[in-house]
Amino acid sequence: MSGMVNTKTDSLDDISIAVLAWADERRLIHPGNANKQILKVMEEVGELAGAMAKNNKKEIIDAIGDSLVTIIILAAQMNLSVKECLGVAYNEIANRTGKTVNGVFIKDEKKKL
Image 1 (cartoon, rainbow, N blue to C red):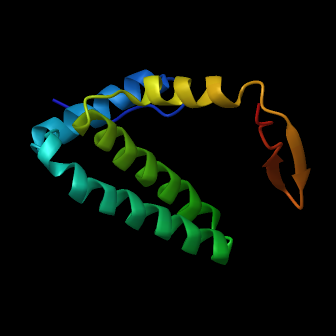
Image 2: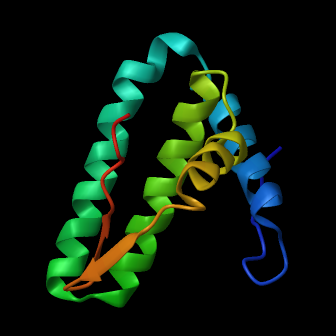
């Protein structure tokens, strides 16, 4: 059912649907698999760190893509959508204030009432 996607024309939603079809064909979309899937997420993020350390753009692209695939599958296993999770995260940071120090954003501390 799943096939190749066109990275130039297909939307992120279309590619996510293809990823989920691929995962479903392999019987990965099951809540009981989530604890194993988070290990796959961490494995792929580790590979991304390695690619970054080597400054290897081809491996960086592959590792970011692999990380996204594992996160899309993990979200589905938890009966969530990546779109929903991303929207919640964005709404949380949208009005966040802070400053960038050495390329890292440091958020302002919330004032306690």
